[in-house]
Image (tube, rainbow, N blue to C red):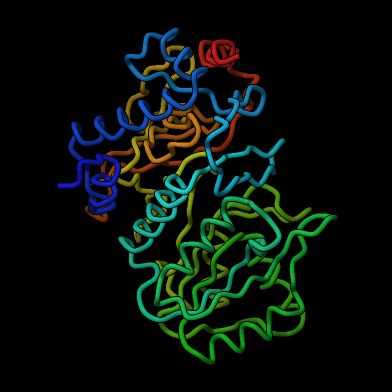
Length: 356
């Protein structure tokens, strides 16, 4: 048996419920590593009583970053999209990077999203031009899957901002579908922009080969000026335009600070993988809200050894549901939108004072 509880956690089926002692062991292993590396974090834990493990309110990291240990070699520094403010930075050493890529790949595989030979058309920033978490991690996952025969990016980051390579899209599409099934990955706003652009040119449909899929993530907020998106409307339009079944379109939900990615199953639930625990908590009491009631999303994920992100309190409202018609044992998250941090000048914000 592997003595490393984090490795053992990642060996579990993605959407099984892990034994409590294994998850607790992996979390304790992660916390010990972080406490040794970050004296300020050790002080923070001691001041908060250590047990139960306190969460850190996510905006705190932007205002009061932890100094990195001099001996730590940073393999990647991921950024958030920054669509709602200052981008966050997540430094990862090689081990933490490997855990993150493996975790996302296993979530994809468990849902059959990369089955069969496919060409990936990515409506994401080319990772050669950005360190945005969505682009960089998905690129690493796609490159690690033998069934993905080619990867093409349809956007890049420039000094003046994101650039969508709209003129290249039709040619890349035609070349890709000639080889067989494709998977479209990325911002729904960019996929919508392409559908609208082709429709204006008289192309009202672009049927994809059988076995093709669409995997969206991010970009629901305001990626393109003047383009408002409704998830259900997007799914309906994309299914008709690309000629694929509704359940071949899945959405991802996640944060750059958390290694776990929450991917829709065929019944529309964002399941929580075995290496993460998700709670919706009352910001006044910090206690979990009842099932199907709104709370701030709190995530515990012991896969990052290079920065104190093991337990974070986010600014996203969510509900937690403990069942799904698909039959998977894992709980699921029902996102309810982002809130303004200023609304919660309560004990959640006091955590920031302790870190400072």
